[in-house]
Image (cartoon, rainbow, N blue to C red):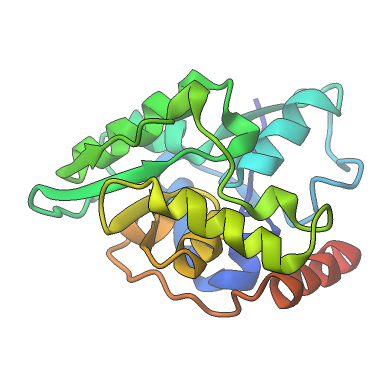
Length: 217
């Protein structure tokens, strides 16, 4: 089966060098893996039978639901089964976790993410609303309600997190948790021992960047 790695728009805007680190590991671990940069909102230009390794919950859902002839698997599932990835040891640090909306019904993703955290010696403190019962970080309200109210939703969800550090596996979720006053820990950052930086986080600016990237790719 032909496999490609799709880092996703948000990761390529946030830290494209992290996408390269992931790709390099996948090539060393799985063999010939091409980088795939066409946005998931466009028809995939891939041969039938191709499997896309994704890091973005939105990509995961779109590749599952919209396009025939291809399959997708999250990076988290791939790494959860890896015998060679050099996991960082966080020495039992407690972190809350925010599950991304597009994978709310995908327990395979929830389980794999938590297995990765366990392999990094992170103690997960689950919020009351989690996994299949999780609620949005607030970002999905962008474009539906005024930005001020979007940020209020972000603060509300962040306030439900039972620890200061919050693991996210969606870049937009990291922006929401930052706006909400928490310390986001993006999963790809954690895997490579890097800090999660807020970067551009104001909803209008962030979504503007994403839309520009989608148009270009």
